[in-house]
Length: 434
Ligand code: HSE
Image (cartoon, rainbow, N blue to C red; front, side, top):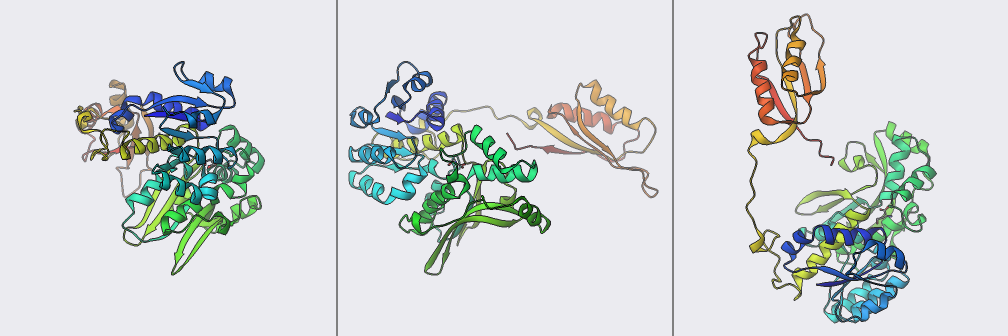
């Protein structure tokens, strides 16, 4: 599968990298070798620095579209100017197109899908909504059995980052925005982020998939966060809410609501705790109930992850791959290989341990010495106050990362101490943040 990549900025560079670094994994799943043979970018110098020698670099994007050796175009320029001409022309020339361009799909999706249909090619846009979260696939395929009642999501990383930094670290709006720009999340024109336009592009697309309606960006009510004051963030918090910029699409009998605005969300909802540049989308289906999707909504590699998934999808769904059925386990049948599955004694984790022991002088030293003898450190430890009615106070700790077999040895030594009363409680911990 020969790809022409147009635009090698943040996401383009990430896409090139993902296809290179995960080449074997990707071909084991798609059943074909996928290669970026050509790259086009106005910044020839940057393009040449980013790609390997065998990739042909050109300044003129249209030469890729005319090139008959290329089957698929990845458009990562963004915006609705030249990108529209490129995608339109590529589809008309019978090429499949993958894009991360939410503005393009929200404003011109109707026209472009018609061309793709007529030419019997695919126009894939998973990366256009919520970056690395596969929300298009979930909504269009995974939830296909449902009548969707509503979709609500944090769809813009920049504004979520600004709101989080203003609340958690007392940053000013401008400083937080500058940081989001430096991190590469913000749009070329950051007013699109701040004024809710970017989120509106995304909820427009989701509303169409959810309710089977034409794409109609102009009908969306849009408010951003520029009028939000620190005071309201604080007062909302006092009332038990967090303020999030939500994109909301609801089905109301025969009507539909589509809107973007700052919204108070009860503090204990999972979505209220989606902070920083992360995105989350809630979809309520009439059969499945509420479902939640969380992940990085911007950035080079997360967005590239969605772009490349679309490329794999095109390979699987078209004659480009020898096997046009999606393999049952994701990998091509001849690429399923045995791997050693670790026994529980060999896993590595941090552990919460709780001891029930007689409170005697030197008890803590005895416990910590056993850890020291095995060269295992303790991350934190609590010794509750001795009460009149409880002479055996609770002692509990979190270990550092340790092999389970070593923790079991420590536990058995501690249980042999004369002060020990009950079996030590052991619970594994998972940070789940990396
Ligand atoms: N500017 C967008 C955001 C990038 O901040 O979420 C991803 O679409």
